Length: 74
Image (tube, rainbow, N blue to C red):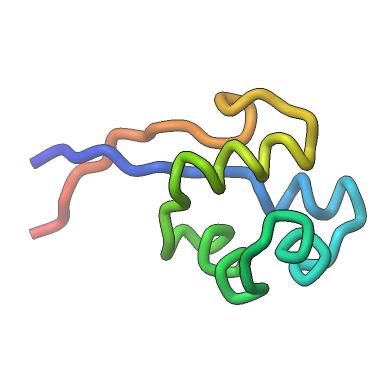
């Protein structure tokens, strides 16, 4: 079975902008743990949060988040 997953490059952008998880969390109104979970792919952000993250980095949504087809392991 194939399913869609959302991947992102929040960690890479944070490094490029020299932001800690705490700084990005503060600028987006969430906790540091939320940013960590997004980076690990354990949490899919709401549309509002995803857009806010993109706004912080001044980037388009598709440059930060994208869909990937994955096969489910049995």
